[in-house]
Length: 371
Image 1 (tube, helix red, strand yellow):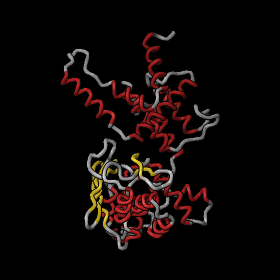
Image 2 (cartoon, helix red, strand yellow):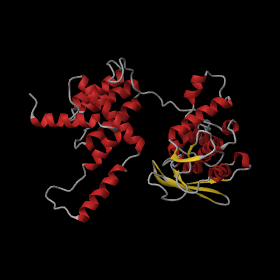
Image 3 (tube, rainbow, N blue to C red):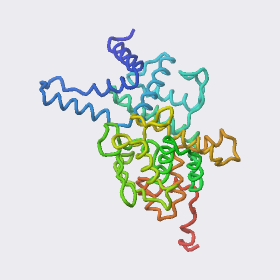
Image 4 (cartoon, helix red, strand yellow):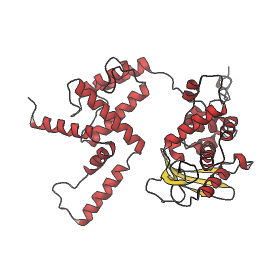
């Protein structure tokens, strides 16, 4: 028979599993409080609120949503197997990982399951570790029930990473040529050109404000100067500055496209890229979601006829938001270190992963070794 502690833990995990994502994150951050032996005061209460705000900002919204989905999936899987997700059981987690890799069991959300990739399973483990920590538990990834199963999955199922195709210079020109010159077209043209010239992630593109600290959800701002635009952003690798120089002609200049969008949309405060009214004649106040960038890339790839030798389904699968970053890395004929700085990579090796058409044999170590 379950003890009172076990029933309490089970009830709390049920409650957390059923709560909406934003409510769940709110509860996790609200767990931060004064120790029971410390007397409350106005100053300490303010610090608690400050600490809670920092806790909510510990990871990006997309990461938190992914982790919450990972936890919900694991919790439902446990109950389908007659177990509880809390406290963490290395044995059950090992079985869960085996099920994800083999696709042998039923999914909590569908009648049939399919094997997940190694990278997705690895991400699930990270998500579970984070979720357990938010609930006051520790996940020991080195426990043999987890570590050996995960090592076996990687050894048996690991595959080379599937890379999205790069959007090259002639591709981006063809894509922006498909856009109209109404307000929505001006915005989308600025998104594509700025994302390509800056080697930006799709989440970075939509995160900019016009000025520093215009809105709480901003991750950077833009300064337009005579010779170009300076983008200051807080990304996965920390704060960095991205310089976007003016192009050779206005039709394809990312800075000019940005100026045109801001001018005709009458945007001088808040998010740079926002939605538009249904008639396309008025800019709204709501910041665009990063999924708009992905949809825009796929739509213009089809409209421009890029890789028309392939079926539409394969063309759509071939390109994504990362295609802009890969395109800059593959097309820019400058010293590699400048591309690395623009993309914000910590190592040249990471930059080379984005270079789809680089010279792979530019350094001849065979001859250097005397052969």
